[in-house]
Each structure stands twice: as structure tokens, then as C-alpha cells.
Length: 220
Image 1 (cartoon, rainbow, N blue to C red):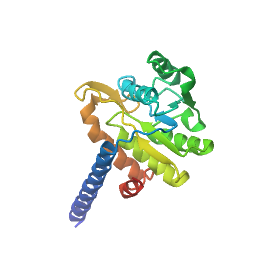
Image 2 (image 1 turned 180 degrees about the vertical axis):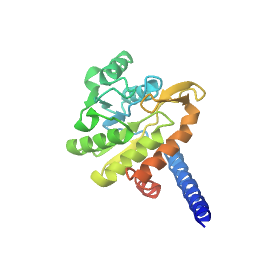
Image 3 (image 1 turned 135 degrees about the horizontal axis):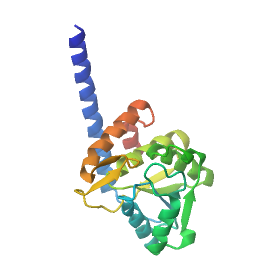
Image 4 (image 1 turned 135 degrees about the vertical axis):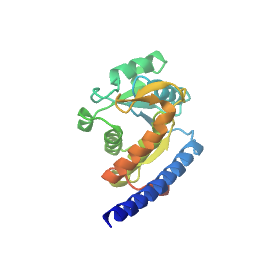
């Protein structure tokens, strides 16, 4: 009896997970199709490892050079988890032609330890609220954009519902290249991270950090 009960529970969980992933793919489809190019004051670049950083740095530079943003906001928190840090990214953007006063640090006590996608999103939304920003771009590597967006929406729905967030997906890099991701601890091909990102989103949803995908679709 216990074995049959476990089998039914596993089947139910598997169905729930499959439905959840299907909704995530719907959100991803909207993100990729809804490419907005309009003037918005700020683009925030989600932290990436050095293997993937050019994806977001080049997107931020492109938006600034096209005069679609006035400033590029970068995490100025701790750098123990694979992210090269504000100083390193600022140096790269300066080298790419962005002027110094257009590069802004995101400083928050939230970013002083255990920096991850969710804590970045929370720090960003609270910072935007404190500065009265109404619209922002966010940019992450293509395989990471979905989780970055869902994390940001999850926070803003609780903390700052009037904030409008737009996706500026990072420049694509070779999908078959082996790189480091997820605080520098995950090594694999970029195409493989598409699956691990879905699993991470589901895990953080069950934990209670992320809102259901239905709420993200409604926000879109």
C-alpha cells in the first residue's frame, strides 16, 4: 500500500513538474519574442562568471551606445561566488568605450554575502524603489535570462508592483562551449544549462522564493 501511494505521489509530482516547465517555456517564448527597444534610464547586468560575462557586458554597451539607456548598473557586492566584481566589469566597459559616469554600482547589504540571482533581484528592486525608478532593463546570459526575470518579477510583485521590467537578453555565445556557471560551481556546455536553469527555478519556487509562473505570465 505504501509503495503504491509513493508511486502515485511520484506520478503526481512528475505531472506537476512537467506542467510547470511548460509554463516556463511559454514565459521564455514571450521574453524572446517581446524584444523592446525604447529609451529606459537604466539597464542592470546580472552577475555572470568570467566565461559568460561578455554576453551581458556587450549588451549593456550596445544599449548605451544606441542611446537606449543613460546608465549601466552593476553589482558592487562580494565576489566569492564566481562573479569577477564591479571593478573588473567597470574596467571592461570602459575598455569597450562606455564613459565612466554611465557605470553605476549597485550597493546593498543584501549583496554583502551569498550573492545569487534572487538576492541580486531583491537588491535591484529595492534600489529601484528607493530611487523612484519606474522602468528598468535587465540583462543576463541567454540561458540565465529566464531565471533572472522570474526572480525580479517575484520580488517586485511583493515589494514594488508598479515597477516595469523589460528584458535585454545578453548577446548569444557558442552553445557548445564548455564554461563555468552558477557561482562558478557548475561546469558544462551552455546548452546544458537551459535544463539546469529550469530545475533551479522549480526548486526555488518550491522553496517559496519565486512566485508561480502563472503570475509571471500575468505580469507580462
